[in-house]
Length: 423
Image (cartoon, rainbow, N blue to C red; front, side):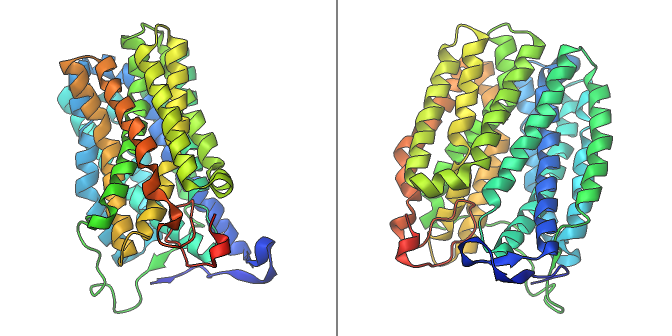
């Protein structure tokens, strides 16, 4: 693969003896961080107003859960197309178009008058989310490789910052009783403009001349057997994240009879703890190690789930959702790193685990709705709590010493280093 932007390091050493990144590479790094922020802001804007969308469309918890399955369907169908478009035309132009479509599709859910219209809107929501997600993660990996240090955890932290911004604005709008269609319209315009600006400076990865057809990506990649258990650990974390992100506001309204503003604030609190943990993730894992970080996170997430299930008051449930976010934040980057060490084909393992984690995050909200319709939302979060406890017992699978290669907090394929660099 080749890229239009310079590979870019300057002579001389930075901290740790690494070459100092060029100005163009640093600009690309900040630009891709901006893309992650915009992508997260769309998600945060929507999830904070899910109760409003549910009321406006007149759907039950079960119907809402059914509708929330359609983002997963849309993403599953669109993501292979995004990979091929990126391969054919370059990642940068594909990302610019798909990110713009993702920000503009935010307009649709607020106008859905019934469950079927909501399903159609969320199908497009998932399709554009998935396709833009493919491009931004591909460019982030390329940027990380060229910089020679981990940046993925921080980038995912910026996604959480975007969620925090979007959900924070949603909380204010809910408190002010502003129509979500007005909020979505303003957010769509602002985020589209920002997205078009920041994507000017990202790297552009293209196939070498004559390799467009020879190296076309596969339609679907399953993880090898060695990575299945790692994918299972990531599934537990992403399921808890997706369930909490989409259902925390509904939980507080329906189960604990809180106001719309307080319910929206629970999403903001969840996003805040996720953002903090991810922004600090690389440093914490480097200091304490991958397994202790995941095991401690599992304990926090399990305690958070118990608080949510047992909460007699909204404040207790909000604290529980915050603990869930804090607990699961660093698991996925570490799962990607472990997948890269799990077998002879790291790229296939990473792609497969990515498929598992992305799909689980999209199907979690619909499964939560289905269980809630059959039992209750409390019953749904008993399942979330049980899956969170799986992180405690499965943390050892992410041990960086299993293959004698260095831990990479970001989830990039690790490079062999001297033993002293491990732990």
